[in-house]
Length: 159
Image (cartoon, rainbow, N blue to C red; front, top):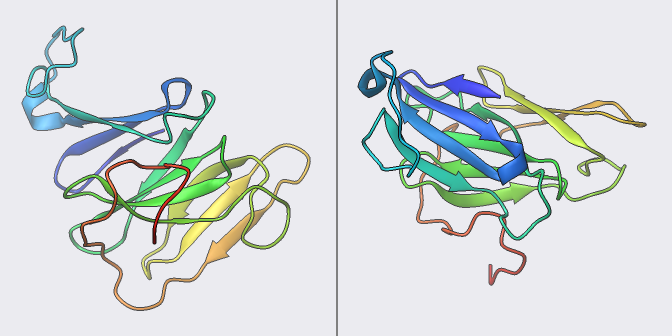
């Protein structure tokens, strides 16, 4: 997965390493550049967002952006844990998560695709022996804000 926001930020899924890498396309300027140490600001690299790093490899499978003008939410599908996260794009914190492993409504068996529509609804797609699409209807404002949790996908939370 690779998506570009309206402000020129590139989000790239790295499922094997349980992360999303974030780049500024304007700063990268299309020239060859090396940044093996993942230094922020070099070669357009901004940061990496770890998605449930305590999990076995295979979390950050797909991502999409919210439909508000600022595209303030980043939705990330977690293949290994059967959820998708709502992440505030301003501070990269987890605001909420939806789902769990299973085959009933609201649960996921190999969550593999995410997308949004103009009304802020989220669509998920699953693969393997129970392929289906689910729609999660958005109520209220389409944007994201809040302090959230820095440890995206942590097992226990006091919510």
